[in-house]
Every structure is written in structure tokens, then in C-alpha cells.
Length: 279
Image 1: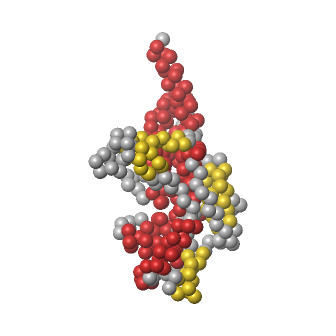
Image 2: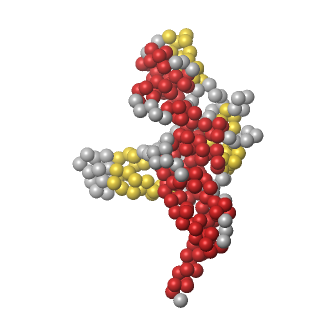
Image 3: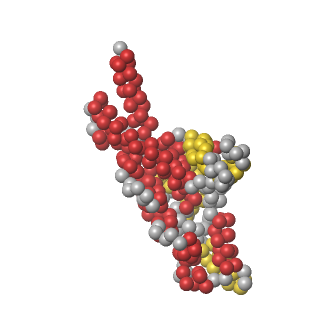
């Protein structure tokens, strides 16, 4: 599958690359997801998964984990969604909870990823400038957050400190300088970042079946798609055993298959076993 990034990747020479070729997860990639420790930070997992499954990005000579880290956050989330789609299908079931304190009813919502197209915010440059509201003669240069920034934020639980650390990384200032900026200047930088960066999060308008309250829900798509892929990979060992037992394939042969191909063979075996049991 070839997709167009909603933002784009600007290389060291200033060239923009925005078409990415994706490969569906193989058993080996699913094994990578299955061996992750519980509670593993999402950012490095996304980097590792993209490094495995993005075959090409624009005209770059190769796609590496370093390139994956330096993709814009929204582009990384979009690629994870598309990996889920070509591996598991376009249907995504998510769990929402009614926000009403007197209800809190959980509900399943089914979405079609094929119909979810984020707004394109193609970039042509790696760096941008914003004027200081109180001193319009002063400009601050900044870039948009990337996976490298996400990985650097792992472990920072205080939200205000995380924002300061992110702004420091994206402007080249240190945290003390960021904290010393007027609140209006910080807001101007944050607003410009939000305006320029590709946004993948999509709001879901729904109605609680229990209390009838209408509300808008939103979820972290990369985290949710990753969680779904990990959960769907939980039967991997059983499928390897079943295919190796009946076809005498090696573990390496089975792990090299995509999930859809592997499960077609599993379905054939289960069908034959069902016929044999009913004979």
C-alpha cells in the first residue's frame, strides 16, 4: 500500500518526501509486538514497528528507524493506522464511556478506517517562525514535534514540565528560557504548532444508549491500533504450532507470512479437522 503523509518528511537537504510504501505485518513483526513488556512506552514501539514495515519513503535511499523517529507525530500515527488497516482490515472497534457522572456506561463503537481521512497539512520546510506578541521585532524559530521528541518525553509525568521540555526541544531554547517567556508568547508558539502540525485524532459524535446523552469522544489512534494489533497477535504461537504440525513448515517459514495468509491456511486446517470430526 502506498499512502500520502498528511504532513511530510523534510530531509537534511530540504527535500520533502510524503509518499510512503507500507508492508503488512508478518508473523515476525507480530512476534516483536508480543514480546514487548507490559506498559512499554508507545513512542519507541511505533519507531520499531515503522522501521520494520515502511518499505519506502519518497525518494530516500532507505527507510531506517532514525527516519521513523524524525517523522512528525501526526504522520507516525497515520502510518500506524494504515498498518492496522492493511494487516487487520478497515474495521476498528473501540470502547467509549459515557462522560455523565450519573451514567459512565461503556459502549462499543465500530469505525471504518478507510473513511477516516485526516486533514492534509503538507509542510515545505522543517523550521517556522513566530513573532513575540509583546515584542513584534523578535521572532522565535521552531520546528514541529517528532517521534524523537516523544521518546525524549518518556518518563516525564508532570504535564507542565513536559510542555516546557517539548517547547525547549522544538525551539532550541533551554527550559529556563522557555519558562521565562511571557504566557502569551508560549501560547502563540503552541497555537502555531497545532495549526501547522498534521492532526490524526478524529472526534466521534455518538449517543449513550443508556441515558441518551449526546457526547463527543476522542481516542489516541496510534495507541488503540497498536493495542488491537498486540491483542490479535496473542494466538500467534498456536497458529505456528498448528501450521508446523500439519504442513511441517519451519517456524521461520510461518513467521515470514502475513497474518491474512497465515490465517487462510489455519482456516483450511480447522475446516478439515471439522470434517474429520463429523465423519
